Length: 252
Image (cartoon, rainbow, N blue to C red):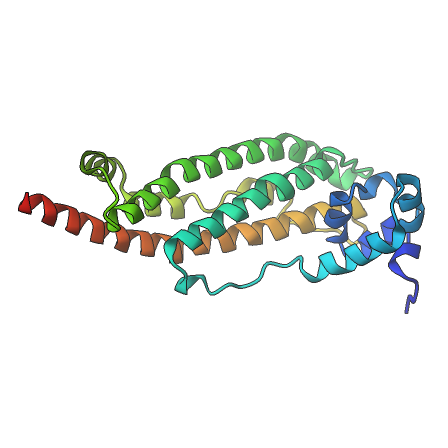
């Protein structure tokens, strides 16, 4: 059993020990592929960092890295939207830039993964651009509309604007389209043969595949929250607002 502390291990050993150390090291300004044969302590000294602090940060970050299961079903809809927006922020500012970085700096070095390297370097930036566009569009339309329904239920609305919004948007149609487009990573799975790794796969490939698998799991969890919690709550909210709106319209 290796009794060495984290700071005394080579960067390549740390990442091989747990592939998700690569992401944490990257966030600390240490791309693993640039310092493979230096120890964490050596890299820290070169960068003017305190090895013990970085070591502790690695240990703490790893403990809290996994997403927690939250009882969102019992949360009000505005908190669910804020949770989803926070997840969007993490995707755009942390996850996607890191994965794109390790993809663009990927040098296969073996024939088995040359085509994967070439295809991923072309496809992943396109996937990322499309995904970010989808996120911003969702926040600017769907989330904005649901929040307007919430305000309407509290009596804070402009009747004409609310009527136009309800005529323009169909949450039922949005929910149906959302489920149809849930499998956004099908192309990447095809390129990587469902993230299949050969016995002698380079460490860089292992890190990329581990990150892609984890990202896909996050997307699936995110989609379940939207499909199974957000949309049902939003459809119920829309139904109540619509009923109250037309009831008040009859009285005027």
